Image (tube, rainbow, N blue to C red; front, side):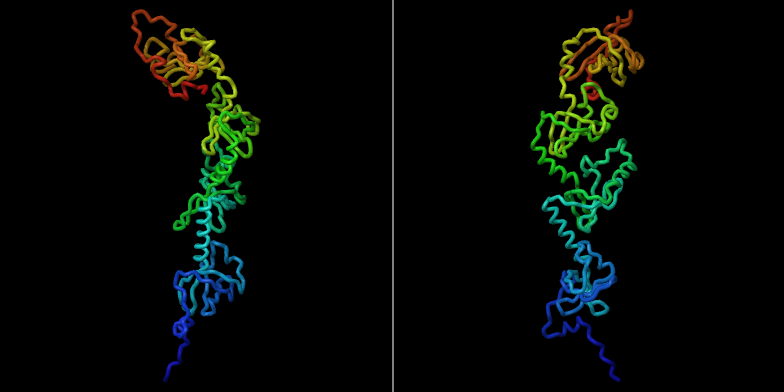
Length: 391
């Protein structure tokens, strides 16, 4: 008995055809017309020569090109198999869309043009964004100063709380890094902002006075906003000629402020408040001289001596070797913060904001005791941030 003949598959029929058309290969991207579609699969007519099918996860398209397809529309897809179990060509919108989406990202990166992105989530390290349909990351370090979460002590829960406020908003960024193989896309708001700010900064130069308001107060200084969206930092050492330990006790956000530009490095602006006033150390040359005996209050102690306030601005250092004729291991053995005593000025350098004081120079060497040899106040300089508290 002769077995019934099985019908040839669509693909086999094409191969047997004397006028065999050129067929795509696995990995090729083809274009065809949609002839049927449902939530689970889409059927595509491929140049009238055969039918292709897209199904399952292969329907997901990063480019968004196939999101609103209807019957009759043209669509691009990647060939996965030349013939599946149903004799149809197996296709993928996902691969074709991925290639298109990342190709567009490469173009954006090369153009260096800023783009708008939507913030979709946040974590302690930054913000998750959407560039088209591709997920990307905006690190905290790449936020502008306006949006950077200024949190004392780096409290991560507080940082996350501030970052969550951006979810659903749009920010202008530039693409910073793309790695298609790793699926990594990094963007930077700061890069887009710095480019814009560089243009605005051409109107400014060091020595210029600007007017604005305090936009942020941190442990290391204050930020002042001025001009067209510009912002500069006044470091704590540039706030005043006198020592300021806690800027938060002296400045508030929104406070009107005048400042001098003392440096422009790329998009980084350094400002100063104290340079709007004369340097009191230069005026102090009329008041203090080497050899003078002055009265001062001990402000604080450290390993190399005691800092002494002579007035609201001028402070001097009494090196540990100048506290007593005997060897002293701890300045607290001789003086305590708050003590008011007379000292002798043994060195004075107004240009460097340094004054050396001596307590033992006003005291006689105890009878029968040879003075211990030690380092003088001017022989060993304290670190600049300690020995020059007003700078």
